[in-house]
Length: 172
Image (cartoon, rainbow, N blue to C red; front, side):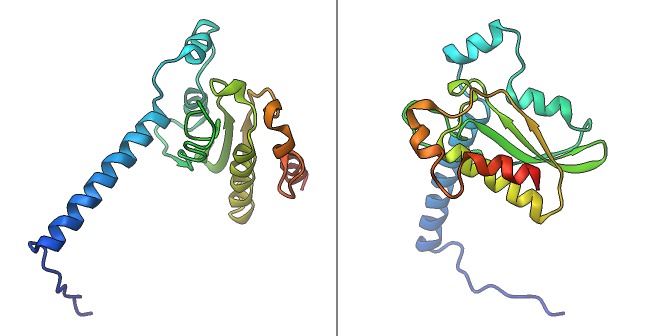
């Protein structure tokens, strides 16, 4: 098989400009991911610590086979959508190995509005279930939730892909 040759001029002004723009975007992405994965301490995190509770990613880590990877899905979901809410929609979803079997893990982050469900939390949860179904993965739920976020309950329940769909999918 022959090698594919590139005609890109990596030292051209356009290439350098594109590279710099891409590096700037990458830096912004990494900054957002850092905030999502390692949030700065706030009163909710402090309260969680005082209660002696494990944080969501600590719970997941203890569940996974030692040394196995965890592929987190949508860590930036709902970023900037809800005032004062960290990225991730208050839910951590991903694929990890438990007892040698790949599983879909869905875990509420109780430090985000008590683990309650926003409209995008529901969509993220449903998407994780859909991926699990399509790939024949069992779902493991680590629930630490206050249910629907009451100020937005009118947006959580009446949709076709609503809060109740989560339970419908579990029963299939």
